[in-house]
Length: 254
DNA sequence: ATGGCAATAGAGTATTGA
Image (cartoon, rainbow, N blue to C red; front, side, top):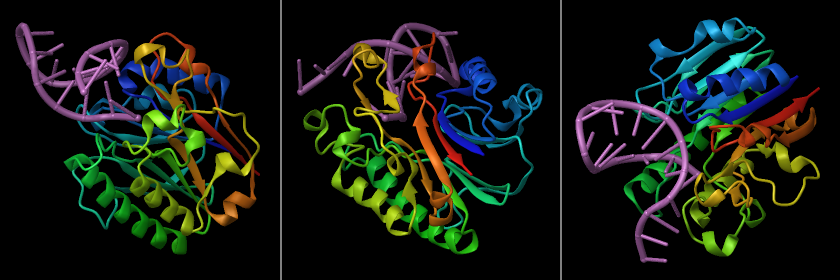
């Protein structure tokens, strides 16, 4: 069983990339963020045609999340019931006995900005909700764009980024509070290459210079962490023409 | 210190992302 997450930065623009990637990487489940599509525009037929059932929660212009699955999808939930949010950032579903949560954590823009305050409130409510989900679903996987680099080794230049949004102590503490629930970063369950990132700035040849951040994560409950045999970041799609600024992260479960 | 690139909405340029 392979599960993946990818911030596609507009599914309308990136659908060809997604289809090409799935053709070579036929994962069982993939969580998408920043679809930027209203639900009436979601490419259901195109994805059904390549064997995926789809569920989605979108809005105009911004945000939007989706789960694609080769297995039947049940008990779909949109948004965090503990946090009234007009922005479409969370989608959960039960697939193959697992509870899959697809999350697009707010960016935060700048430390202490209104958007940062919203990010921190969002994360606190997310933690509270995941605590209840863990009780209900011991087999829980939380995949998405967290917009937080957990440690300095997840940042290309920690000095340049120090104290900034995505790496600030409060954001890292919020991410650590998810770990405290028992959710484990699948990527760090294994030996990994140094300077592994999942996002690179479009500007200044960020990808070629590997000026990136590791901000897309797959968090696994203890039961799933025990069943995880690999977790990798696939840089290939970032090399394609007109890429998303994020690349897919994939976990393999027995 | 700023903008650099990309996508969207919508028709020049503002907003957001990270």
